[in-house]
Image (cartoon, rainbow, N blue to C red; front, side):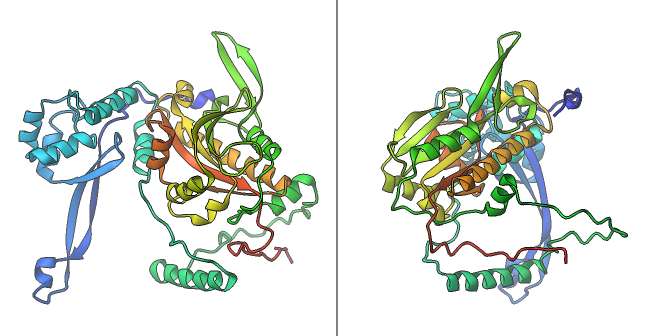
Length: 409
């Protein structure tokens, strides 16, 4: 991201501002349905979204008009707000707890919301980016039911699921872009026979690891170093220190942090750690027995039980203050952070492949529970994705598909 792209509008909305969503469509009229009339009627609803909690509520047009009379994220007289918004005492408490209104209070839950608002106003979050990040966080999401998988089951389930998707969404778009440009220019044959080419060829997502053996500590050390560790540093004027790592980062800021959950590594006790990128060391946060850690993974990863067998799970977070120090309220800053995490994920894949290990990356995770486990506030440090690696199961990974080589003939 070049400095030339750093210009921002003169008028910048506050990051904690409420967002309004207008949803409309057609739905069954239940009052008529009981009399046998199954016709649909048009509807419109207004939802207000709070970046302080990542939640939304449906409001009437009159309530929305009342909200527009003041800034809801300023400290309000709760009695006046309740009267003008037409809220019951219970609804008012709900609005305050979920960050739709702010009150001066000593109640811990409400005070935490106000302090989060204050931190956000002093941060470099751009309003639309914060809205996307806050609203896309999951809590208690569940995926597939835990069940044994064999090749026949996988093939059958794949066929059933594909059929449902096609029935719901129509034919799958072509795997190759159908854009026709003629005449095409033939390129020379690409040789992939090189160390990097072989690594990329053999790279794949692993969903079954060997829990009977431990991951060598040297493998853990190498992968954390390649993914997150610093090669060196350079001191700049004004006490600014830049780190050089093995992955590119927008603005050379390297705001992504690593929290490894160790389940089975030689010489390293199971538990949750923070990785120190400069000292290349693990800082213990919480001792967790292997069996407990594996059970916790299923919940944190939204039911993806196949990743429970990994030897190491790495929760990637971003320190937003680090990224936003340079790209303050910048429309591309959050995208840059996500890109950084993508670079790291690919490096972990390639490093694991080189060591004949398996790896995976997922963003289908319960962000809120991970935040609670790490004791972080998403306004300052938030979950971006989760990676994992370990010793692959020699046989039996029925989640893995075999692919036929693609040729131009």
